[in-house]
Length: 441
Ligand SMILES: Cc1cc2nc3c(=O)[nH]c(=O)nc-3n(C[C@H](O)[C@H](O)[C@H](O)COP(=O)(O)OP(=O)(O)OC[C@H]3O[C@@H](n4cnc5c(N)ncnc54)[C@H](O)[C@@H]3O)c2cc1C
Image 1 (cartoon, helix red, strand yellow):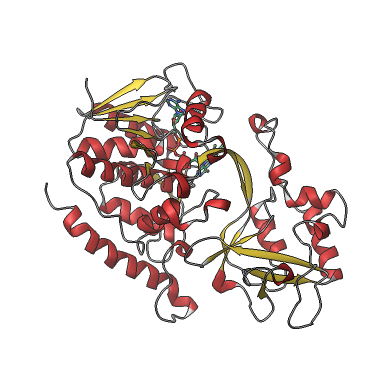
Image 2 (cartoon, helix red, strand yellow):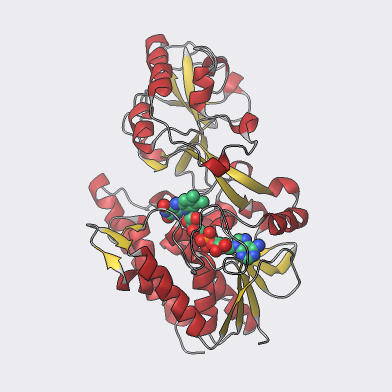
């Protein structure tokens, strides 16, 4: 069959993109290497949209949770992934968990039966000039990764994420923390949280004792360490290592004491909106619960809300804020688009959502039209805006959807009302965007 769009990768993003394009009347070739001799270290079947780990799409609460809101938006846009998830959901409280086998079987069946899709079980190793969506995920085949690196530049494709925790700005106690740059050089660009000697010593001990996540066997031998050493590994090297590394207090006058702190935790702005702040040098393999417990012992972060916690995993992703335009097209080769986790979103739902929106953009372009991006007040629009420019390209690391990606609320809402205010605003913005989008062509 001749085709309009080539999708490489039949995971969460590629499957959703194939469905959206096919439903828009475009012919799709969907190349998936599983079932055609290839595989990844995490997948176990040859089904499309296989969930490689947990069977959960996380919270389904569209009123108070950003991922629940994203579910709702995707349903409104006719998402196949959401339709299959809803059909095969299993009891999980307010979360949307699914029977993973039935879910993947359903997505596979729906796509294989669609007259506009040809699923080809083949590994793709090179880029062509045909309209293409690359949705090969965190474990992209090595030859294709090589081809992407050649096109984008070697340092624009990462093979590991090394994520430091990201904190919501409005949860940092600025009566304790202060804004400054070391030696007052440049602007007062960092938030500084001070630790005195006993606090620092307890903190180092807690890092060493804290429970860690193990590496998978297939991650262990990949050389990545020196550039992004986990903070607990630094702590194990000696009690002073952190104080001479990322927790160095020199050159940082604390306006409340007039002195340099014994040690410091610095946070740097992580998105253009200034709502998210990254704990500098704090990449970690500590378990998530341990991170919250230990990092909340830092002065100024006692009530910290984390937009994401730290982690280190094998993960292929490109530097999207630098490489992609607002429609997820490669600036240097606009016929090549990216979707899913390889764009630097994180998670099953986010990956499928980016697959959905890239397909909508592609379908519009092939009809000779231009689709305006979903508004940044929506979960979909906020995620897209973050990937394609809102995030800092220098420190870009994969990100889940969260309220910190949305423009701050204009008025002062009480903390208890803020989440609902975000989702109410998002629903209104989505309806306005959907009016022309859903009009028949
Ligand atoms: C070990 C592990 C555990 C994870 N656990 C979770 C979790 O619990 N919850 C969560 O939300 N997210 C989790 N993730 C993240 C998860 O991978 C993504 O959220 C999601 O699957 C990404 O969707 P995707 O479509 O971008 O990639 P994938 O779903 O991985 O799909 C990519 C597809 O491309 C195919 N492919 C790759 N290279 C080629 C090629 N050269 N030619 C043809 N086909 C190719 C692959 O076989 C695969 O089917 C985990 C990731 C890993 C690696």
